[in-house]
Length: 437
Image (cartoon, rainbow, N blue to C red; front, top):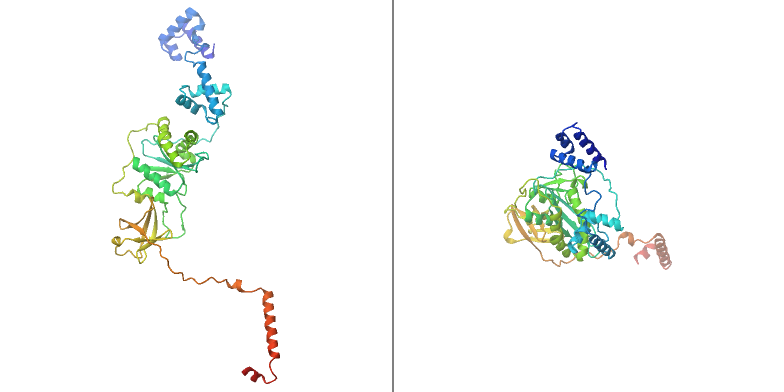
């Protein structure tokens, strides 16, 4: 008999002795007065042992059969030996057993079976640094956590990829894509893909990487601009999306946990289908993993409704999601970009263009456009000309032409010897006559 049973027995004994009422005993035990009377009736029939549950010490009727236990352990051992489940934990292994082999078993039950079979080792939970919990946003689209993960996603089967992810703070719904580089263009493309599918969120939450924040330049000068945004920062401002910087990785913990789960489950899924290229990885990501994430880990928002704002029809999204830099229009209505020359089309030439500073856009499709008085003018590359080279032939510098001290001394001695020989051949006559001859 346990201590809890002894306490109940003492309380029921006080009821039998009429020290307390059945209503008071029911309140202390957390049961109804009717159940108190039923227990008292059982105690009169069976004695004090009636307070002990009748199924204690007996085999549970819901216990899984031994054949299922043996099959689950055998399948796990076979897959582990074949280097397919060598890094699977009980949670993921239970899901795979149910999906592939029809063995429905709970993760904790499977964990106990694997511990008994010696196929899993219990691990002590790590004590991590405690951070203040931040309440989720109330509606879908209020805050979007945005980050990139660098990992060996293909495990050496192909090129190294980067995973860019956007996670909604209220619902944990994820939008992700594999890219070749963690560059401004790839992140702008991801922002455009999300905006076309869902609209403009109210705010984005990122780290302080150089893609989102730059150090102020020439702050000691009075002419220095107050804000010096990056290309992504400029695009967010034009889209009226607030940018919030996280001061630590733990601050954007939801997207970090998304990457932690992906580095476990997504890597194993890509291994299972044998993905070896970016196209195959994105196909598995969009068709299998993201729907799985939405079913398993997404949740309902605290408040109904959508906080996303629709894209304005007058907004040129391709113009916003581009690399914008300042250039000066030359006298022949051309601008330079990346070592090449681009021509303004004759039909787009307007008064006052020459010598003016304009903004040049390099869009994601690598076309070049110019912003001029609320207009977008497409530029055409000029044909390369074979100009004659007026550069003189290369001559070594003077330092290379000078001889060293020994060579100079030898030359002086030779010149003095030639001069003495010439003087000896001069006939015996006045010097002024010899000079004239």
